[in-house]
Image 1 (cartoon, rainbow, N blue to C red):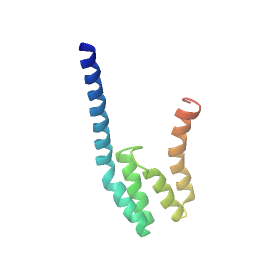
Image 2: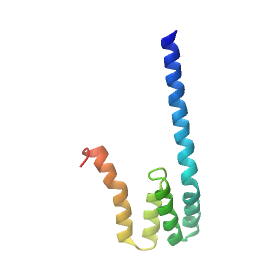
Image 3: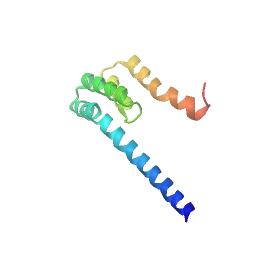
Image 4: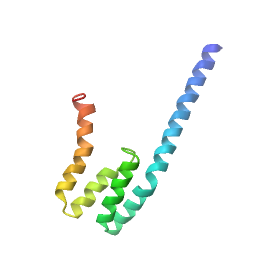
Amino acid sequence: MTRQRANTGFFLLVVMACSFCAVRSSAQSGNDFDRGLAEFRAGNYSSAATLFAGAEAASPGATDALLYQAKALVHLQDFAGCVATFDCIVVPLMRYTCWGSF
């Protein structure tokens, strides 16, 4: 009986932790990211890029803000800024998934 209670307690702890993380990330990333999407869809790429940068700074990695920021910078023909933004996406992925840590 004690082992069953321990397993149930562990399961509940994991569910609560996952719920907390989901609520936290959606609450933090909502404002700037949603406004950035609206600006992007309206063709206001400069303000969209700024809002996406703010969304990424507020909660790193929680949204697709960097991807949309790079797309907005392409529309503005700021290719150097786009490459720098993609570096923020690609380099961490390479560091931790492909070759281990540098």
